[in-house]
Length: 177
Image: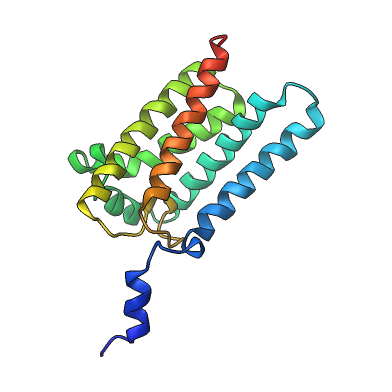
């Protein structure tokens, strides 16, 4: 059966429209709203708490999306992640690492350790994404699980870098910077 020519055009332009990233944008906006809803009644000094709640919701939601179809995530993740390429079980473990980090943010559990682990995990993820993008790998981003269709792209890279930077800012603030 021949493909519809308009389908081919859509495939070629994949990732070229903001609409392609609506699931990710919605998740970011909801995470921000959850963070604000949780800190609003607390008054002053809300910035660090907002970041914790944002990161907690964001990481927990992403983990949930991955866990829905764990084997599909692990297979896709192995295509670009530095650790999963060498150790396939890491693709099955990673969503639970992400969930653990999300819950640690919600619970303000050992904040400095949580920040450092987040920086490490997100940096490894960012390097893997950069390498995949340089190779021209065109896959759906496993970061959203197999539930949502978002292409692996510079947006994925920005997400990893953004989460790592937020953790670094919180670490810096915690250290008295």
